[in-house]
Amino acid sequence: MPIQNLYIQDTIIASASASGIGGINVIRVSGPDVEMVAKIVLGEIPRARMATYKKFLNEQKDLLDIGVAIYFPAPDSFTGESVLELHAHGGSYIGANIIRTIISLGARYADAGEFSKRAYLNGKIDLVQAEAIADLIASGTKKSAQAAMNSLSGTFSDILKNLNEQLMYLRLYVEAAIDFPEEELDFLSDAKLHNHLEGCERLFYKIKNNIKQGQILNDGLKIAIIGLPNAGKSSLLNLISGQETAIVTDIAGTTRDIIKAQVDIDGLGVEFFDTAGLRDSPDLIEAEGIKRTKKAIKSVNLALWVHDASTAQPFCADNLPSDVSSIVIYNKMDLIKSNQEYVDSKNQYIYLSANTGKGLKKLYAAIKKSVGYQNAGEGAFTARARHAEAIGKALNHFISGKDKLIKDRAGEIFAEEMRLSQEALGEITGKITSDELLGKIFSEFCIGK
Ligand SMILES: Nc1nc2c(ncn2[C@@H]2O[C@H](COP(=O)(O)OP(=O)(O)OP(=O)(O)O)[C@@H](O)[C@H]2O)c(=O)[nH]1
Ligand SMILES: [Mg+2]
Image (cartoon, rainbow, N blue to C red; front, side):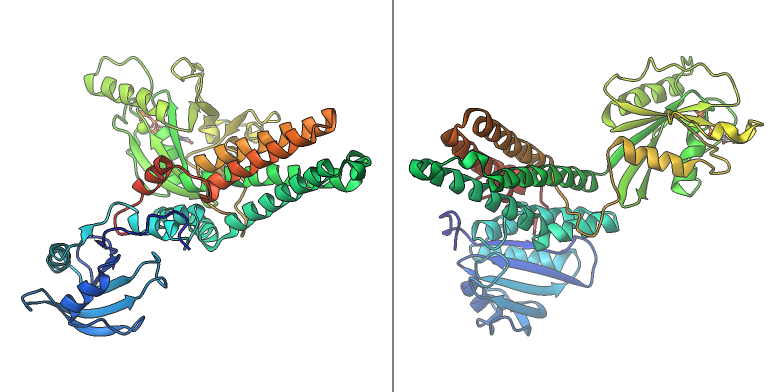
């Protein structure tokens, strides 16, 4: 059943495959004119959900391509509207020509994410699932793909549904007590109510943490490797990426451009930036590199501040913006005679050797700890900043309602706060959403999804 009455729309078309040379190009048409398009392009409406080998024609009966057509009559399709899939040959011309032809019949090119948006508006998927489609396509690690799949299959939505039901229960329980004051007795001293309130609060915090994990999985991390020249930054990047990504020499000022490497740390996608060593350099090129380093530091989640442990390099954090968290690393520990320095009792610094790799595991553990990432379990799901915001809002209403109930016996205010809490949860799955939010979410999709 349509959630919002926006059913009467134009027919949209896009290629669902990546652009470029490929074997097959899947072109998807969705909307009220699909049957008309099928009659012209295929000469008939094919049997529902049957792959049919067909000639694709234009209105003048010129042959555009030969391929497979599948027709999904409404409402049993991805979008909930009638959909026609044309599996044409790949390459840049054939597909574009078919799309042009169908646009000339009255369809229009789909906006980014418009197929998913229609699926959501027609009640086929909720908003969390729609977002998961985009996350799945964008995921770069096995864990993040798994987590997006969990969101898509409804794990996240089910957890929210469960929480919503608990809030509903509490609301009805208290409202009933208000409505029948003679039975009110002392419902506040009822252990069942308190157990429920506590259980609900625990669930809230659990979901909040899961959302945070999901967000990290989804977004990944950006980490800059910074420090004085010759500290071993590029050597560390090479160690981390497992290849000779950056040039390493014993000449101070070797690295000038920012060099990036994408690494998967236990399912956490991390992009490392190797940077030019920080110093005052009269060299024009190196000075430009240092300028870029300072700019890059502002755009990352974390900075690795590398020191050469074998020299008495001064520790200067002047160049670090105060709001960037950092991990201090003492590198070249293989040059230090006593190995005991590898152990730091206060866990303040990471001691390692970029040459031997010793200490790298500790660094990875510190990176995960600094962003609060726990190894994603089977049930992990992907999440976004707007989910974190909404769950925070829902939790605040819950807490303030609970306080009012326990401290002031204010049952009505409690019920209202539970309602507001449910409303905030509804923003996540899209039960309650503004057009503006929808526009923002779907515009981040790629065309054809
Ligand atoms: N013994 C030892 N030498 C290291 C280690 N890490 C780096 N080096 C050496 O230190 C020198 C500088 O290393 P780089 O990785 O180029 O240092 P950098 O910080 O990138 O230097 P710039 O790009 O100039 O800022 C090279 O000769 C490396 O071989 C280490 O862990 N142990
Ligand atoms: Mg370097």
